[in-house]
Image (cartoon, rainbow, N blue to C red):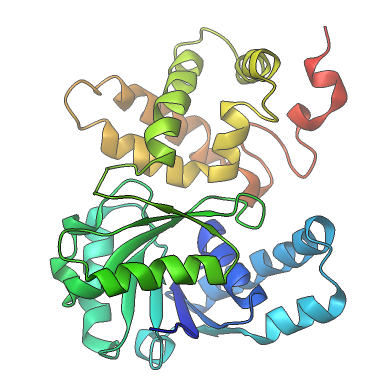
Length: 299
């Protein structure tokens, strides 16, 4: 199956990046969100991706103009998916919200349409039944800063048709991603299975007052040579996404210690509009975070 028309549901930080990269690759893309204000915010994010692609991908004005011509926007779900070959869902990381969305999507999407979730922790079988087409449902999980961190984790569930899985792999390659192919379902996939314990440990150190965020990041960066530490990564992910993941994990046996961490993230960061790169302030201030300055790692 050839995928030519794509709808991205959710114009947040990662949803807007997925849409932009897909349009940049020459496909027609419709961004769906719940109201005009959300669409306006998505368009503002797209303007920042224009700048990023010009600076980091050497995209010419002509290429950027062509990319934007491929982008369309809608607040009516039926209109947004009317001729979609693929719908990529990139809405909040909460099972109830995603399940409700798929219930509505199933009513209006064409029979041909493949559904894919960009969930970072939930697995497709948790809400495959709600899609009304479990055989055409899989996960396509992208990493933030998609144009540079160009990988897509492709994960089906027991009922995903092999041809649909292969269509997902082909789509990832078509838009310049390296497909990371999972052979079975795994909560948190490959990337977040590695990443979440790492950032959880950093957040616990911070929430308990063991060390401040810059000290923790500096320790990691000096010891490993990494370009950023866990708090720089959290800002890139976005604090709202991180909070939802931490809150969900805090209900699991043995993870009760994350309740206090989630509360601290909510009160000290989210309620202060320190959302990460998307708001210009998180654990660092953007566009020139302290960790990117040469003096950050000096004695």
